[in-house]
Length: 112
Image 1 (cartoon, rainbow, N blue to C red):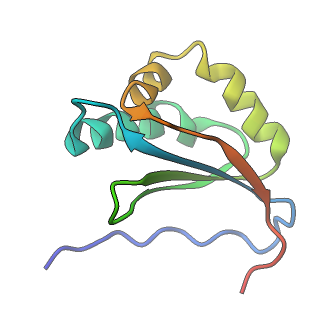
Image 2: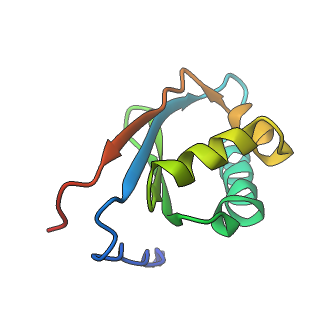
């Protein structure tokens, strides 16, 4: 049986949490394992060390659509990392695995 690690819950006392939602498809010639390796590198080398980073999930839909969800404490934390994206090779490697990527932000309203 495959065990999926349990993600840490979002702190309920962070009312300004921001969710970065980036749907995409794999770039031509990129395998799932290459995407996951690039995603892991980005997460472990960069994102988890950033102030305001709360949690991240990589999702795969049945139709070949993927989505990267990143939970931030606030918009400033997300913006600071976006500025870093142009400079760090882990971002370049991850983005090279994607096509038709779009970036959206949503403010947390309520946790149920």
